[in-house]
Image 1: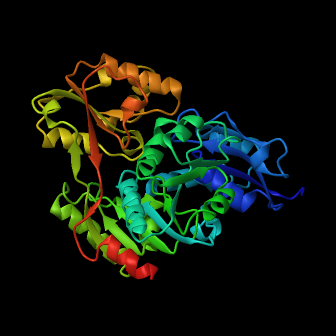
Image 2 (image 1 turned 90 degrees about the vertical axis):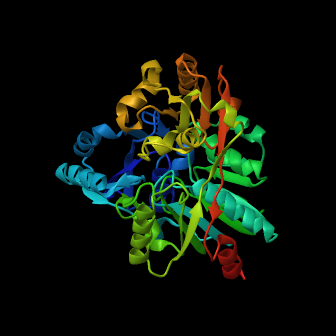
Image 3 (image 1 turned 90 degrees about the horizontal axis):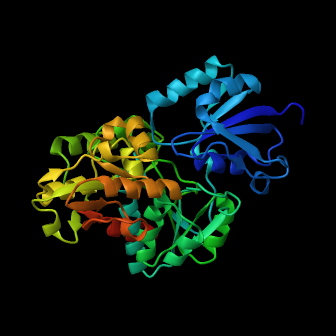
Length: 439
């Protein structure tokens, strides 16, 4: 025990905890000294609790800000740093590797094989090369197809444990009341609510071995609904990867999105209805070159709104999905496409009216420009989002998020909600491919 290798796990409240649980928790060869936290607000200065950390860590494990990484390596005489979060460029990863090496530690990436759990049920994994590629609509489309085949389907969603980790160990969502019961953030509800609208049960949490055991009790098929561009937590029988032609080249330049591209059985190129033909061709070429055995499915992600008259000729504030704009790096989303399609007169820039953490988000991510990211990683941030909306002088608020924000925050202006669903526009379709492979 005295010769245990001293470890730091770099994370963002998700993959890091899973890597710990399956690879380090009960392993006497390692001593995880701490986690570091990045990407997500307000997740540092917490603790991975003893109830989850296991018998080797009776006092739990601290979570420290990543900006202190170099000094933490030296202070704790760290042997190895394990990088465990997603949706970052290859260059970003190597900058972190250089910092870790310079501070005196080994830099490590665990492989999917080291961290995937084998299920008793069939697993279909839906992943992506970047966050905001259309992964969630694709997951819903897969569930729709499977239910049409009379399969009992349960979704297991990539983790987003931003609250009390002990209470969030294993969560089951079967109704909107469960979202309230678990005190979900906007980011969590964006992923869970659309599945609930389709009457699909969703599991999530922290301990994905325990989650799998429960989900297997009520499913014929488990759909892994991945987060960001992370690899699956479970061994997939069918691996579907979404690629985004609005960000051509990212499919081969982001971690671990390129891994998902290389592992895919099916590559779905989404948003082809709004992308440039040359960008579609570039993404398709990269997919064929990187993974010639994968089947490519062309798909559209058309947007619709409740009332086009609320947009045409109006001064609009556009609210887009938060993670897609922030670490996803997108400069527009479904709300922007709706404003263009339905003839908005002017897009009002929210930056002069932003307050608190919303203003800080604009400072940290200047590429966002005149769009409002739906940030809601806690009640105070949700209140700041609502106040920012209140302060913006506009005729209509376009809600381009996957959920109806009006259920969660007060919006004192006319609104129009955008919806978008995946539609295959080539053959074989996802339906044909799944029916064939599941026989």
